[in-house]
Length: 368
Image (cartoon, rainbow, N blue to C red; front, side, top):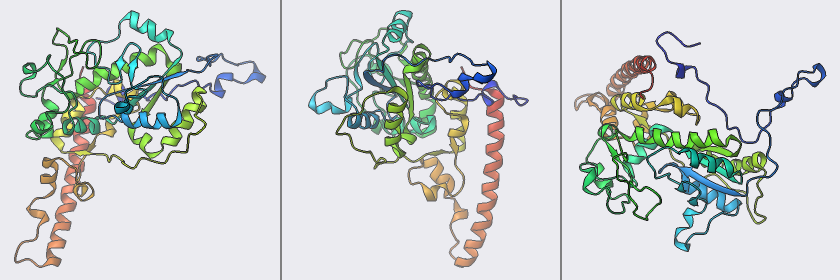
């Protein structure tokens, strides 16, 4: 039941990965004659091609490396670009990052529905962690100060990383995002002519990409596997075994058990103003289809700075005020005592502030 002042997304239950599973409850009680026909039937043949789709900074390269160790790739790549196994020459999309600025049309959806030989692996990352990463490594972002000075135009990598260091994370959350404006393929320089490659902010870009992936889920629900980065890093072997169990794909004979990733991405927390913008701009309805809720964006409390060295400058400054440093003429014991009291008060104040902002965010609902 939706709480007063809330929205329908407050009570929405994220769907599980459907795969090719047939629940025992679909069989019903055969003795009582109440058996139901399963909504999803297992196809006669398992998929023979696996392709990855996902945004930049979402773990697509890591997912490709995990797949390559366990399965044969469907595409051929140059020896210098082995990270594009499972990720390029993709039917309809061409490239893993879905570098297009319109949704799939009826003809494209029909083609995807016809290709039951494809297993679509959709790689996603927690929205606020992803947005923060897009500031640090802004792959294929047009110049933030003057988008049309270079887009459409030439190839863009992450040249504007240094430029974005001059901006706070809050500024980045609120600035327009000019995305790579190609129309048909990656690096063939066939650019779009409209301005639909410019998004009001990075969260609107994410919304568009998730909507593209949601179209695939709706078109071929039995041929989709959603993988979240933090889960994949913790247990890539579980991911591989689930693919075999759910989709009956064949593992390479020389494949070895895979350990957890050597590089584990830590969750980020946001200052209160950053958190408010994220809660307002993220479309939590579409996020729910990929297993995320508004609780996956974290507001920083005092003490987080002690556990993470990668907080944004506003958060670090917010944690390191005069109250945290002893006065010159104050004994160390007194300083610890005073700081402890102030720390407790500040923590309670932040908790109350977060509760008020969560209530306000739920009452507003996601922006369209």
